Length: 311
Image 1 (cartoon, one colour):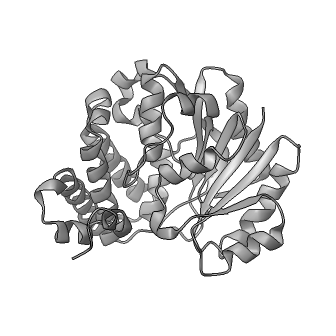
Image 2 (cartoon, one colour):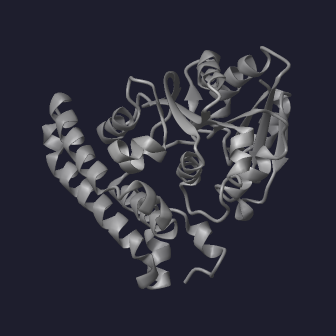
Image 3 (cartoon, one colour):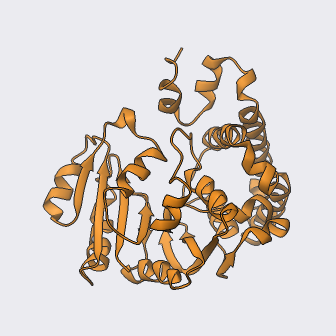
């Protein structure tokens, strides 16, 4: 199958020295592979590094016009490939073989999308390490709409930090939705399941990808998730609310802290999870909040600027 790897970039110079050799090894194994980089007018020499790299195409979009879903849709329509691999600049495949393992799952004609396992970087703090362990386990699986009774909203989970889609299936659902604050991958996952397709998790396709968010960053992240769920309420109607999954996460994180001998972080654990809950609840009710407050609670300020100027 012809494949294309698509990567949005913005000030990615710090990531490229480790990332580009892996992408080159994957892309040059066969003539049926293409690299497409979408640079949002970086100011750190990203474009020059890609030019010197000399492999793949580079397209440019204005950073103010970048859209999580719309830009990925536009980029996907610039290539001719049956399988579309999407990665973010801060995800580093363990090897080129891991990209191979992710795309190999499309030998199953029922699989429309797949995502790989994310491992924490060495410097990641304990809360970031637990998140990766919780969301990206050791067992692969394939899920269909029938699994929503058991797994709820997690059934539609995908991560575009390291994911792949069948071109024809993505086109059938109308691609990614424009104008989402985040969650274009989960949006696509839900639509694909409702259309009768299956999603796969490939545990032996690994990338390093993690964040060491502060409490305030966690709050903002979950505020934006709340905004996404409020805007796309069909997801919760079809797959259920995330509260049950949230309680399972809290129990898992507490157990992880104990096993890591990090019980001294219990207060931080309580504060973090309260702030995530508060951020999510406020995000779900963002329409009732003053606009000037909403823009300060969100991690994605530019998204709000498109409809109204910041206060």
